[in-house]
Length: 125
Image 1 (cartoon, rainbow, N blue to C red):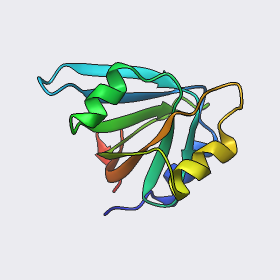
Image 2 (cartoon, rainbow, N blue to C red):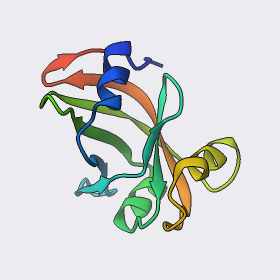
Image 3 (cartoon, rainbow, N blue to C red):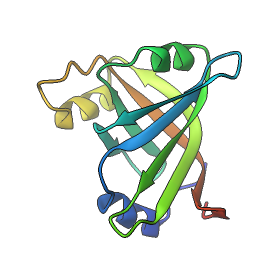
């Protein structure tokens, strides 16, 4: 499994606003949401808090892969693609609860296990 390059981890810390989290329905219909409650779990996973998923959770349960798209303050974009796992308990869920604002429900934690990392058309990992 590829790891997030150090340059992308640094860019993650300087991201501007929400990320775009995309999944697809079993018929291929794309779905994208803005997500503000996100965190790097380690060098291989990004966590998105399930505060208000609807179509997103249906897509995850149907086996969708996904992507995270973010832009930095310097207007450089990055996309991280991978498989998705969903956690309602355990270490990853607890990690999400540690930074997810209490005003949000945090129903679960979607983990994107990284398959590839891109900046524009350049594959970084």
